[in-house]
Image (cartoon, rainbow, N blue to C red; front, side, top):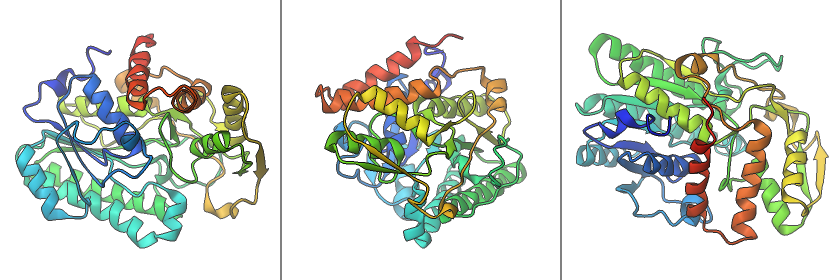
Length: 357
C-alpha cells in the first residue's frame, strides 16, 4: 500500500492543493504527501503559535500562501499561478464550542469558503477533482447509538455542525453542476474525533489532557460517558487520498465515511488509557455539568462499510492504540525533546510498516 498509494497523484500534471494546510490535520497531510512523493501546495491562514505547523517549523517547505479562504481574488490568483490538478479542502472553523461564540463567522468560513473553492475549481480547466472534508457531526443525531451511513439524513443543531451541513449542500449542488455541465469530480469525506500528536486546540480532549499532564493541575472532563469514534489522524487522511485516487481513476462516489472498527470508546475510557500511557501527571474531575447537555451529542458512531468495500480494510491502529500513540507523541516532544517533524516522519513510516492487508 505504501508504494501504491500516491501512484496516481505522483503522475498528475499539477500539484495537490491543501486548503487549511497549517491546521492539525493539514500538517499531517502535508507530511504524508511528502512521504509519498506527491507535489503539494498549501493555502491557509498563518499558523497559530504552538500549533503543530509552528512547532514543526514547516513555513516555506512547500509553495504556500497565508490568506483567508473567503478572499476570492487571492485564492483565484494562487490557483492560476500553481495550476493544481486536485484540491483537498480542509480550511474551516473546526471547533464546536467556538462556533457558539462566533456563529456567523463559522457559517461564513465553512459554507462560503467551500463555495469559493468549488466555484473557482470549476472555473479552472486544470482541476480534476475536489475532496471536501466535512465531519461526522453532519448526521441527524437522536443519540440512539446507531451507526450512521452515508445516505442517512443530514441535520446540524449547533452552529458548527449546521455550517458543515451547509458545506455538504454546496457539495451536492456542484456535484449536480458536474453532471450537467462537466467539471471536476467532487466528493465529501466525513470523519470525526481525529486524534494524534500535535493537536493543541482548546476544548479537545487529548490536548486538554496533555496540558494537564504538563502542568500537573486538575483537568475538568465533561460528559465522561459520551462516546465518539476516536481514530488516529493518519487513518482518515489515508482514506481521503484513497478517495481522491479512486475518483481520478474514474470511480463514482458522492460521499464516504471514515471511522474506526468496533464500538466507540467513552470519554472516560479515553482518559484512563491516556493516564496509563503518560504514567503520572494531573488529576481529573469528571462532570456531567461541564457544559449544558444540549451543547454536544452524547453518542456518535459512523458506519465505514462503504470505505472498506471500496478500498479494503486499511485500518492499522485501533482506538486504544490511537490514544496511546497520541499521548506518547507528546511525551516524546515534552519529556525527550524529540523534534516534532522527526516524530511526524517516524509515525508515518510506522503506520505503513504495520499494515497487514
